[in-house]
Amino acid sequence: MHIPENYLSPSTCAVTTVAMVPIWATAVKKVRETVPKDKMPLLGVAAAFCFLSMMFNIPLPGGTTGHAVCGTLIAILFGPWAAVLAVSIALAIQAVFFGDGGILALGANCLNMAFVLPFVGYSIYNFLKERIPGERGEIIAAGIGSYVGLNAAALCAALEFGIQPILFTDAAGNALYCPYPISVAVPAMLLGHLTVAGLAEAGFTMGILAFLHSYAPSFGLSDATASDDKAIPVLALVGTLIAATPLGLLATGDAWGEWGLEDLAEMVGYEPAGMAGGWEWSSFMPDYAIGGLPAWIGYILSAVIGAGLLIVIFRLLGNAAKPSVSFD
Image (cartoon, rainbow, N blue to C red; front, side, top):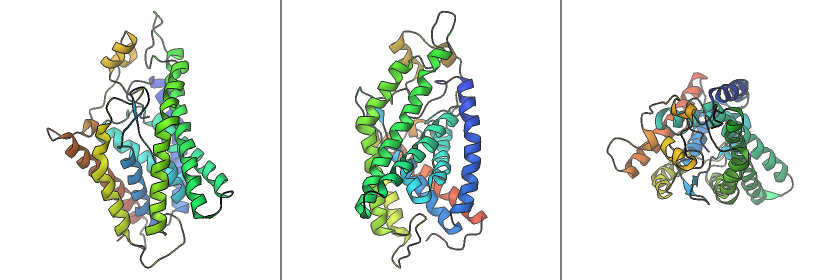
């Protein structure tokens, strides 16, 4: 679901980025108001769950791949505005360091995965939680909400892809950017997300939430306290996910809408001129690869770097506010 560089026109990227500016500003304000100082490092851990879940590529119908996001999970734990901030920073790290998603398309990716996904998922979760009693009901509500939220984000991405050949063509009628119209993009994106990726999102969300309920009940904005509620089980879960990320290498092929220019040209019969002449960012560790190291080692090191950066960033944000409780 990460829209790469040059699949969207510069004007589309500009519009989505401008749309995100007040959303980011509101998210920062809401997080300052609602997330206690001592909980900020935990928000970083939740952001790490998001980053790591996106590294687990899974095969989808049609030969493409997809992944979970865990945006609804963060919204459940810290509120949807905190999810906007956490997922946005995770997406920025992916784009800058690993080339996963375009720099110019960051606004569009954040609109889809950091705004639409958590707000839709959280709304469905809240609606169902009131109607399905008990902790099991909360877990079920979280699973359904996350499934719907992910597919809402996929639909938004498909629409952004699909309007490109309508709005931007050359004199010969060829698309300048993404060449697939809405009639192709929407079914193609939703097929994989309604069937497999949505279930993966629900599985990650329900599994992590159930784990936190059992081993870290005060994780998130809960007022609950417990003498055995330590960081060790949560960090152990993060470590387990990091160690397991090479499983994402087992899924072959690219996600829909994330092909290289040469592969896309083979499929449609021409190179869209806007894409061919577009801007490219040289990421530090493209595709989560590091030098000549084996792919699985690069994947694990990338996971450590990404998750570590998120935890450090949110710890620093908490330190700037002089938190009263340390995460240890």
